[in-house]
Image 1 (cartoon, helix red, strand yellow):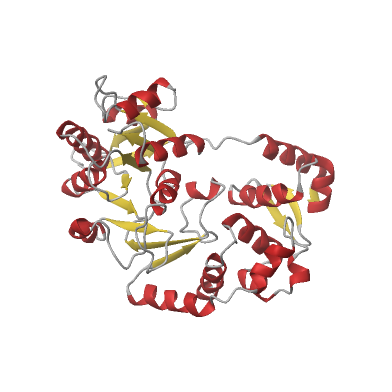
Image 2 (cartoon, rainbow, N blue to C red):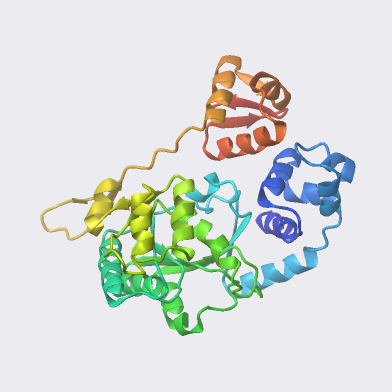
Length: 372
């Protein structure tokens, strides 16, 4: 069942013109990815927000053979396929609007087992930037956090290297398929990360590390994390994209201030000035702000335990409207919710799916919904 679900979701994800939101809406409406692929155009068009053009895209999907090849590669090379309905799918990532349908993971990291925190920065890191990165990454590793970055030159690889040296957990999010490592110079570090961390991507095998893929992967770097720490960055580039994306995703963003005039301090200083990032000067500043602390048990014990207060997931105004209605109604159909809330049906369908993930609502038989 799981393999079939992955097969059909892979086929849909490979269909040009179908985005993750549309596919999730179709799956929610029809019950499964296979049902979506098997449905006639007329039935597809009854799904919220699906018109004739989208229905034809689904009917023309011819990617099952390619999806089977991908499944075979993943099985042979011990790559885990994680779809958005799996319990292993990163919890935090479920709540972003453009979360991928499928993730490919290699390694032994459980992305829901501990807090994830990203360290990002320029590829042209200074010696000072590398030193600060190593300090932050080492402390985070010692505290049991999974340090996430992108395996790039500069700040990224400095963070991964420091975590590995400290015996910690680190994950790289890649902008290409898992049949290669880019840059090739970091292949040895990537291999080490398979033992104490992992490699993660949304891209199929054969996907090359082309420039447009890296800004897209940055939404995953921030999306799977509790917070993002920016060490050094220019006024433009991937690190700023990640930080701004994190801010949009309601993640905490921290930045190390730098000297006025230093080209790779301008990005950090800019985000601090714009109140996108909070100024921090030590890893302890970050841990304290996130309410992450140690608890030691027993005088002889050297084992330290991470205590984390889960982040509050803010209730969107539309979510509050739906919950208020369901709280008074008990159970309601999609049409009844549309009528009472005046929300567009496409928006509502996506919203209800997100609220199911958050365990705010429960779908009942007869396609009715109720408040949990």
